[in-house]
Image (cartoon, rainbow, N blue to C red; front, side, top):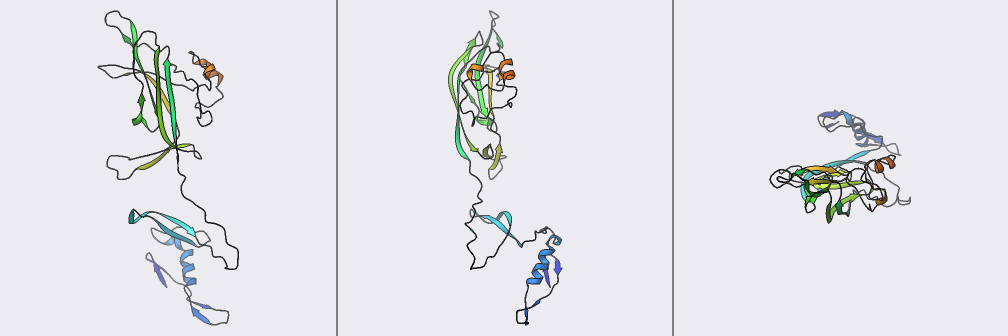
Length: 256
């Protein structure tokens, strides 16, 4: 008889060997416990036919504190048989460091948001803002093209976005604390998304949002001030473009 988690199990405690002699054993009792493991309170679960072992996962930096548990089974092989093969590394994939570079040359036909106090002329103080999804706190801005009367802005500005990327999962890996009270960082995996926006800079009030980028065409030859050209011509393509397949986008229009 054995008691596990408040549950009492009973079973044979003797076994006959090849000579017909009886000897004490706990194998039958252990097998009975495994066959009824789901009946054990709190930790019980249905086991597969193989003998399943449960082991704690520990971190050497935090001794004595379980970081999780792993269920596994143990196979025993005769010593005279060939080796079962090399051990398999099941470590999580490590993301690779990449850098996305975006060059802002100019804008055209931007909405004129401001009115001159004396002349009544329409103008805008244009700047471009960009960021990667999940990294809004690291957004980047160009300098400001002041007092544009035609909607044209000239910059020749470069954005550089470093990020960690898992190619197998096509996800960006971001590690950050959930709140200011969190002790450890939490890892997030999100799709890579680049957002580009055009804004009107204001001195005494909040900046005004003017527009953002649509689905970009793969080549600058297909760019047009009219948004209907790229959206119609490439309507069979998904609404996003994968930079790891199309590594260089020669031009992106911001349709406003």
